[in-house]
Amino acid sequence: MEQLTLQPAQQVGGTIKLPGSKSISNRTLLLAALAEGTTYIRDLLASDDTARMLEALEALGVKLENIGENAVRVTGNGGHLAIKKADLFLGNAGTAFRPLTAALALLQGEFKLSGIPRMHERPIGDLVDALRQAGANIEYLGNEGYPPLKISPGHIQASQSIKIRGDVSSQFLTALLMALPLAKQAFTIEVVGELISKPYIEITLNLMARFGVNIKRDGWERFYIPANTSYQSPKEIYVEGDASSASYFLAAGMVAANAQGLKIEGVSKNSIQGDIKFADEIVKMGANVEYGANHIVVKRAQGKLKAIDLDCNHIPDAAMTLAILALFADGTTTLRNIASWRVKETDRISAMATELRKVGATVEEGADYISVTPPNALIPNAVIDTYDDHRMAMCFSLVSLAGVPIVINDPKCVGKTFPDYFERFAEIIR
Image (cartoon, rainbow, N blue to C red; front, side):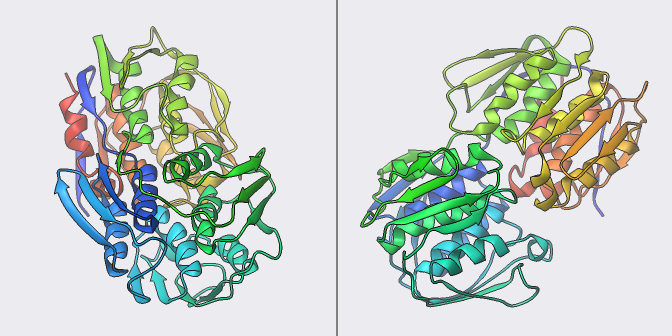
């Protein structure tokens, strides 16, 4: 297994430009493919997840043209597919697998969707159940409730409200919202239980509106899909920098920035991504954060960080970075309402607890929370397993800023969202 040793570091500074948001990139690609007209997408994330979406769209007959670095021209299909039969391999890309499942279930063709073994362990039963309520024809090719899937033509009808659980993954609701306008019928979606990761639904609704489909909702319990609407190209769209990826550099700045601070370009306070709220939470821990038009500057906190007890439903991905910042804090940090970590690229609660203990932390984990108490001194040269999870690798790079070397196993797993992360991380070390 490939390993990367990060040497001890004491200070960071300079400027970092973020890669495009994975969540925005894959949503935008699919909406552009389903829309009428041609869409120029700029600042698109170049990563494994977006590569899987692009491959799938090409296999479905969507015309894609590279028009420069991180830019693509998508000729939309107007809600119809040129190719009605395809086998799609989607790796471990949940942001491709879930929305494509829903869209293809409404587009009347024969499709098989599969991924890597971990993707086949990530639940999709709640989405399939919801689509079946609308008349979709979907079969499991392996274990009940999990990919791979076979999709055949169904009889889509809006005779009843579609009920879907909200407490497993917000991607299920995102997939339904994006797909149902294709049926040209008025649908009502009812969310059963608490909806987790609401900011990701806000991203979905925002982007759908930019493509001409406006969804009404009653709180977070009911969503209304209008009849006879269609996606229309906005002509050009810029992908925001990834707010989840920003969390690693915001964290680096607050524990090790030089006097000028660390400048992070590509996002600011008005981002449509919920994970931008990470910046608010680190202020509670002692960070000094300043916002510009399209950047954030973060400066080193004075003294030890303050431990926090936080409901993280609003920042589910960026919250992982808080678990690492807990190593720099005075006291015990508890992160709550993170049950969605269990069904991500790996079981992130279990993985985070296991690896934090390797550096000496005392960790308590529950079904939907984790509590981290730092040691008096971190254990040097800990060998960190990353579980084929990009965020585990990026999170634990920050341990080197505590002045101890750390070894990252399988560092190339960052290719899922940020292929050159470690090179960019090295550039800010002073």
